Amino acid sequence: MSRDRAPEDSRLAQWLELGATVLIAVAAVATAWSGYQSTRWSGEQAIAFSEANANRLESTRASARANTQTQIDVVTFVQWADAYAREEGLLRDFYFDRFRAEFRPAVDAWIATRPLMNPDAPLTPFQLPEYRLAEGERADRLEADATAAAELARRNNQRSDNYVLAVVMFALALFFAGISTRLPSPRSRAAILVLGWVAFLLTLTWEATFPVSFST
Image (cartoon, rainbow, N blue to C red; front, side, top):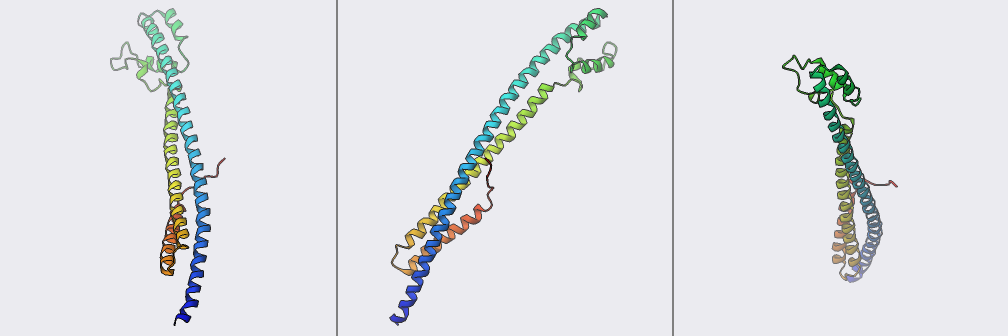
């Protein structure tokens, strides 16, 4: 009986050794790949955060320019409105010619409402949809772009963290594979090796759902 079991134990030991060797090889490759991807996504995160900061800075500048333009519009409009109300045509035209180009359509639309005679007319042209500030709209677009870039950075950070966790899980599989070769009992070696393969395959299946970064 013992003679019959000896070849079987020998063959089992060979298969266990082969299984451990293969697991060590594939887990090592998977660990290296996961570490590389974690680094790549950390870089993607930094790029996205940099873009978000740049867009927010430019949005602030555009908003400041829009506020300055609004102040200019208000000052010139007050002077023009005073001349308009007193029917001082020469002075009224003088101020009108100094309106900014994108402000004039709003003033024209406001005049069309006959504000001196129509009680329902808007109080100022600033309430009309014709009053638009290109810099203000640009500031809003840049702020929206900054928000989107910041959200992308957060997603990239999570992707990097996921790959780091995959590195840990593949390292666990490597640990099981390595320790299985040190156990004297074939059953114990088989049990530990199975645990290693389970950890490896589950992690590999999970990692297959991750996005991959190849950008330079």
